[in-house]
Image (cartoon, rainbow, N blue to C red; front, side):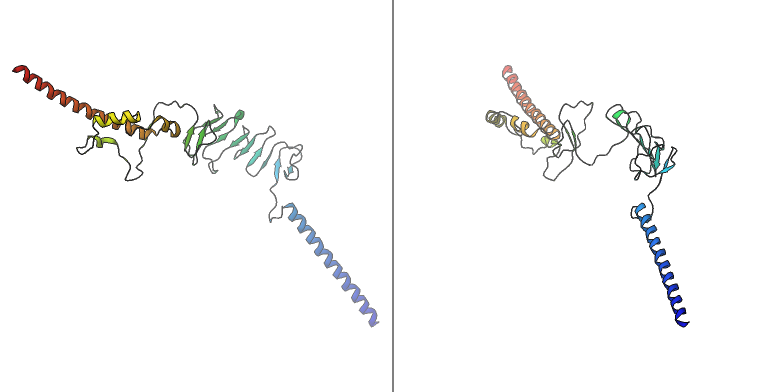
Length: 256
């Protein structure tokens, strides 16, 4: 009798152990399934609310849900006509972005293959309304700006250009008002004539070869041209003084 009770107790303990193990395996299976559905994270993939008859669908498991052509996920809206909206549930263009909390301060529109920033009606391939900041270099008509902030391969037509002089060091020449200083060392006309005879250009002016190879710095060339105009003015004044003296001497000779 005592042995019989021991056998029954062992059977009950074995049944209880099997029940516990089965429950644990079921919990692990459910947990694994949930983890796989959630992509391995602690929170599930956001469901996509569809407007069709199928109700909620997940674009990761059903990227093209039948019966739900329009669906929204978080703040993105995908329309059946191919339009995508960020911050709007009714995108009117292929990419329609709205909302001041995004990295874009103006709305972005892509109607008819044109990109509009700050405008809903872009007239060209890129149409920007508002101030624009570019941190890199820009090439127009060329794919290689070559280190310039703006490099244009072609003609430029504008109504006004302002070149701002930036001091780059103590040795840089200033605006050539110094030509009219009392201690300015003005070349004699003989020295200028000799330089022109030898170099076929004015002193300090770049040669045609240098211009062809390196181009012309508008600020520097304008400073040089102004310097030459001021030097020419000094030469004219010197010649005028000589002519005035000569005319005085002629007048004196006439009086004799």
